[in-house]
Length: 91
Image (tube, rainbow, N blue to C red; front, side, top):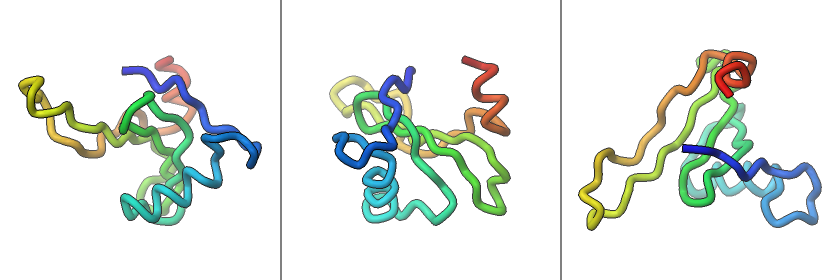
């Protein structure tokens, strides 16, 4: 899975960081301090978890495949790396 859509800091862009933060909080109740920064082109989003509990880890919300595909996994959060630096090293 790749997260090729990096959110822009420009408010005029369709997928801008501030709009994505607002959407994440409104639609999926993502807490303050958890910041979305990229999308896979579908419903999966990667976040930088700056909450006290998250301590800078990188997590992703992976959107489940439709039932007709024989779904291999349910929707949910998965830790991708313990820090942003570790995430970048994995790339």
